[in-house]
Image (tube, rainbow, N blue to C red):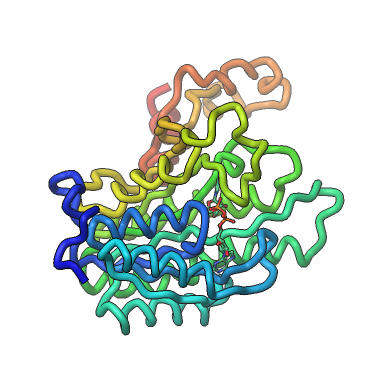
Length: 317
Ligand SMILES: NC(=O)c1ccc[n+]([C@@H]2O[C@H](COP(=O)([O-])OP(=O)(O)OC[C@H]3O[C@@H](n4cnc5c(N)ncnc54)[C@H](O)[C@@H]3O)[C@@H](O)[C@H]2O)c1
């Protein structure tokens, strides 16, 4: 193996991941493969996790993870394959322990593994609900939790979740998928608050890239070369780096575009209960514009800060 891989040499100054250990889940194909290659090219030792399942999450195959490991080794990087499903707590433990056994630690977790089943709400069955939530949302907890405990001890870490514009803006027929990805938004926000005091940064990517999951039609407005996974990977490299200056952020990324998706509270409508009486349903109908006006908004730093805003309004109005 080369002392320094070619790709690492060509990496931007200051963005080395040398001596960092990363887990990328679902890294045998699509976006995860790009992330694994990108992190390895910056010097990270990468545990390439992939169950090798079909798009709906069924089945298993060791060859996708093996092939990505072979690619990384060929380019002078360091990688090992892991074929465990992220969808159970025991699986999450096994994946993290594997990285520690092979590479001696854990610094970066990229929660990327995902399955996809589209079904209108009326046709949803319990099995689909569970199997989608277990991989996307359960998997994010199961892999991150044991890694987080190591990161707390070493006072340093980078956790990257994968959400989706579907979880924020929605699309017809993706109820469970959107619920899982939306749930990741909640986990992201709270874990970022908790991780901050331990030197752990937690961010999420909402990718847009042509993969097996997206199919060919979704991104057909642009030529192939502009909607590849490699256009998303730099955001994961940034989130994984020591240079990352954000935490709790969710970035929508694809085809050269990078935007922050954020939660906010409109200035809204306020009627002082002590002075004017309670808000009535009729008041709401009359002040709908104010409640919904997004031109004036705040972004409380946590829920307590949101409540402080209400108390401030109460005391100053
Ligand atoms: N492609 C997009 O435009 C897009 C948009 C938004 C979000 N995403 C998300 O990005 C992530 C990657 O998706 P992709 O487009 O590369 O899809 P993909 O189907 O190409 O890759 C997903 C990988 O995850 C693996 N996987 C599935 N279940 C697993 C499990 N239980 N344990 C371990 N590995 C498992 C699969 O074997 C597969 O290799 C997913 O979380 C997806 O929801 C993708």
